[in-house]
Amino acid sequence: MSASVTAYLCAKPSADAIDFYKRAFGGDEPGERILNEDGSIGHAEIVIGDTSLYIADEWPEGGHLSPQRLKGSPVSFVLAVEDADATFQRAVDAGATVDRPPMDEPYGRAGWVIDPFGHRWSVTSPLANGDT
Image 1 (cartoon, rainbow, N blue to C red):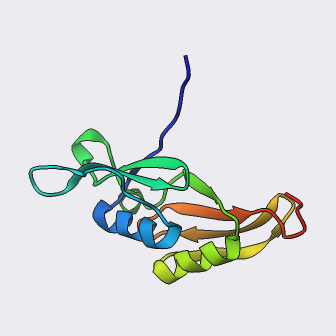
Image 2 (cartoon, rainbow, N blue to C red; image 1 turned 90 degrees about the vertical axis):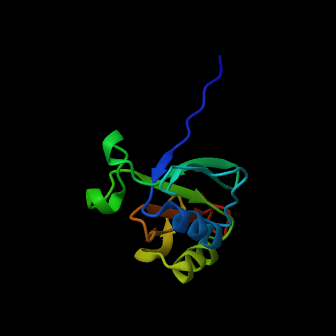
């Protein structure tokens, strides 16, 4: 049997987060949103590169809480791209906060941003000389 893991993000409001991920990271929303009776998003999908992420608004009764409510998140994302600097800048221009500017590391070029919904992203790419 094969297995896979898909992260399920909580954002407040998740409709704005979906729009941010489209602008900042070139995301796509391939399916229909499932809305709750109050109009909030109960389930949606965003695809960045070849990775699917699920996303929904907060549902406190079910323990689905956003980083804003939790005052941070122990989980971060690594976004591997061809040009870390360009993607990093696009994320900042879309509203992300710089956590650490891009710099060369032993594993490649990387910078950290915090998206407007409290999720931390490491934007990384191989070094220009081909080292990783």
